[in-house]
Length: 87
Image 1 (cartoon, rainbow, N blue to C red):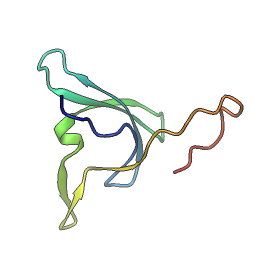
Image 2: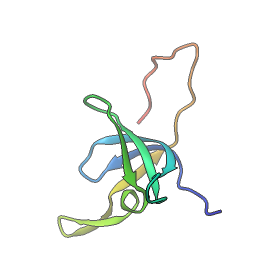
Image 3: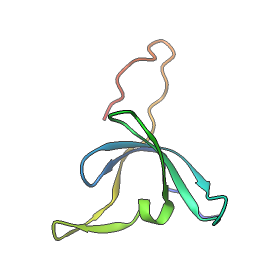
């Protein structure tokens, strides 16, 4: 089985932050998808085609990753569950 990219925090090429929660399969197409959460606004939960999530796109004449990996999930601190997530 192919190794999956890391779960954790990603920055969209337009600047917003997201957290990759997990990977899944579309029930109808069997295509692999990424399950992720916006880290702004209403913190919506989203699903995007795996290949599209990790593709290289052109923005302002430059080739960039649609989502750039920042860092892994931080460890949950039971003593301080509301501690800031370091980004």
